Each structure stands twice: as C-alpha cells, then as structure tokens.
Length: 170
Image (cartoon, rainbow, N blue to C red):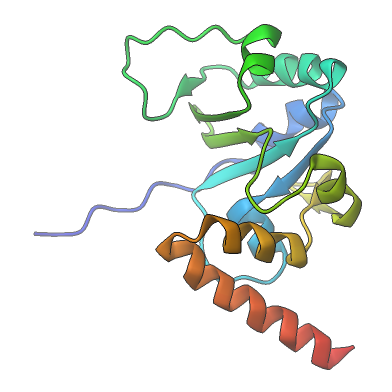
C-alpha cells in the first residue's frame, strides 16, 4: 500500500494579495513563518494572525471574499457558513479550504499574549513579492511550546537550534 501524497502547498501570492490590497493588519505565523525563519519543515497551509478590531475585521472579510471559494475545513459539507463581519467577530480562529490551498485565520494564538505583542516583534519581508509581517522566531517558539503537539515539539526543537545558531553568529 502506498502512502498518500501530501497536499500541495498553498499559492501564497493568491492568498496574500487580497489581504495586502485590502490593508488587513496581519502577521504570518505557523509553518510558513517557520520557513521564513530558517526551518526545514514543509508547510501545507498558510496561517495568518489578525488584529481583532472592527475595522480590520471588515477589511479581512473583504479580502476573504476576494480569495473566494472558502469552505470550513473539517466541517460537514452541508454546514452553512456565512462569511460576514458578525461571524468573524463572534468567532476567532477559522480554518478554510480555498481554491488556492488551505488558509487559517487566527484571532487568538496559544502562547501569545495578544496580537500587538506578536506584531511588535514581527519582521517585515516579502512573500510572493508582497510586503508582509512575519512572526519572530521567539514568538514561534512560544507558540510551539504552548501547542505542545508531537509535530510542534519536533518543530520547537529545530526552532531552538536555529535561535541558538543565530545567537552564536551575533
């Protein structure tokens, strides 16, 4: 019996471009942020932490509508989902399947005090030619410690090694 192929990586530009164009206040977190910080672990989704303010949620909803074709990942196919400001404000974390790959939007993240703390320590870079903020290695370490799943523990060890190596190079 052969192993199933892993899912394809997301089309980062197609997921990020509506966020940037609509002025959404977000920080790239998760595996893609790990890769940007030097991790060798692959990532098959895009995780974005977002500011929970009313105006930013409105911009986020506009951007998500532009991404289009969103379905809740892991939900029954017949479950109705209304993509509007009220839904996002009443929730926090949503995991989507999109035509461009899996996208998770996170209003709350274990291990992170608040979005402002995450944003303050993030660094600016480009992904797919788009300017974005990416979570710092320190914040990724805090997130992985808090999540504490087996895959997170493995990634945590790598992140700590990367941080140690950077400390030695400074």
